[in-house]
Length: 67
Image (cartoon, rainbow, N blue to C red; front, side, top):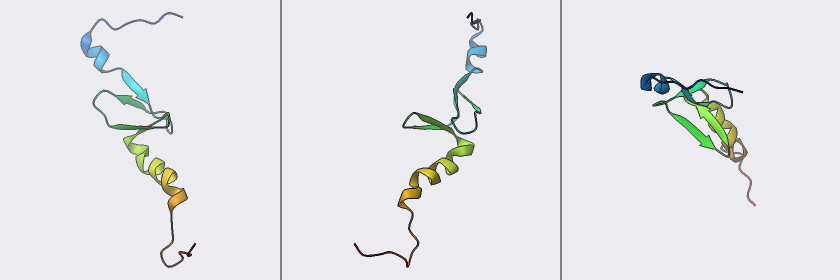
């Protein structure tokens, strides 16, 4: 397989640096992204990702049980 390399430095900045694992959106240089356990998440998917990661720790106030 052959890949063309960009000869223009500006073109290199416009190339995606990562891809969101949840929505497959390209993530470019200078954009915020999060990586956790091999998963890369874009800004748009962050809340969904965070909720999923924290779901095991969710409690309903007033329904706590003593252990």
